[in-house]
Length: 292
Length: 301
Figure (tube, rainbow over the protein chains, first blue to last red):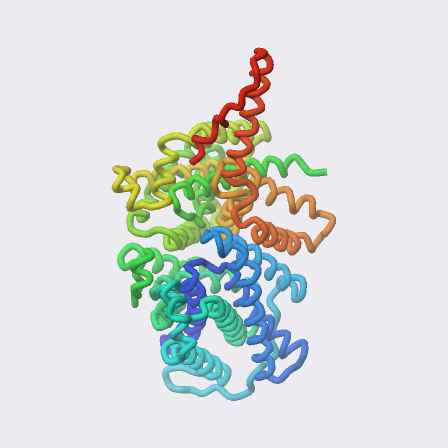
């Protein structure tokens, strides 16, 4: 029983982490909240649904569709919500514009797929394995491998590639990065594209876990990942992973041992505690210490 | 064509817009005003329905509760600011929503009903009174101190301003505005439940301020009017109206990210009016027209 819960926590936590990394990429660079992010996340599940159910594509092709969709939505967010107000250095206008974009995406999902969750066809056939402590099905293994693979890939990209250096440099000191020859404009665009892909893929992975594409995950899981971002420490991908797993664990445990009514509160309580007692986040970075 | 209820809601939305605006005056963002709105709605509702108090007393209770809880919640503002405070307020609103979902006394998930008494004149008497108060304060020492805190907190504190007190004051005043709006709202729609005060209810006030313009008292009024009335005029679009509404808001912000109504516009407008008044007065007294310096020029900076 406990083992099964731990497995659930691992899957939920890695999902939170992926969405939180998407937030942190944009927030780290622009210091602005992107409220369209949770809706791109929700849309990821529906893109998978469109791929495998409507177009009956094989699973890998459907993932390609999700990735393309994520890139397009990320770029659209940058272009329509964040670029027009860039010269004002105002945090409010782009945040609100991204909420309006979130509204548009919600409506698009409602128009195309309706406001009810859509059941996915079975994606991966295969037996469940009994590992003594818990049972794990093939699809759960696929989800876990994809989630952790994706996280490691992002981590590798950020810390081991030139693009990653550029992203981190712009996040650290935009003007200095520019002086050192980093193309700030294309780095910002890249951050949005990457963040969109991560959100869409996280949405896909959640849909795979739940077996359905649900429009309501935007306001529940999607927003909670915002708390995960700060709990982990802003601009810190590894922190986001740890915080994601922590919140996932607390979430699953509240659901298992307390009541349904308190589910989802854990992330917000943890956020308040972190802000009060360790405002730089669990793995605090210089960035968060300075801006707080 | 547009129902009277839309104008009542517009008045309540103006109050919500101001609740965001007042907090923004000291440079803080609150995306949790639905939490204060819920507290106001429920406390006023309990006062009238369960305790049988008159509406005026209930609204007063809502204001006091909003201000006190706002002060308490604002205390962490000593430690955190900017987006982090915004996130803390989101957390606060979720916790309040969850509190009312679990609170049996106010009907838990189902909610409570029986609140009546809010009328169009009542809402607008309050809106006009508070609007005049805010306008009166616009060029006061207090407003300028808040502006100093917003522009540069370190400089403000070296000028001898108590920045902590100023931030708490603006936060708790904003909370009181939201709480009052909640009290009025509850007594207009008769039936309240926790889901009315979800995340989007917190974000709408920010919409009004961002669209109308964050610099003036008038801005949030314009924003609230646009956001409340647009979906009504989009009625013929049927089920597409929210989509079109979202796109319209994006377009509005893309075209005018500084908001529809800015401080610069206000100064030019006031300057024009004062110049006109001055000129006509001059003519009435049959004095020769002399080019006098605009009376507002020195005032706005």
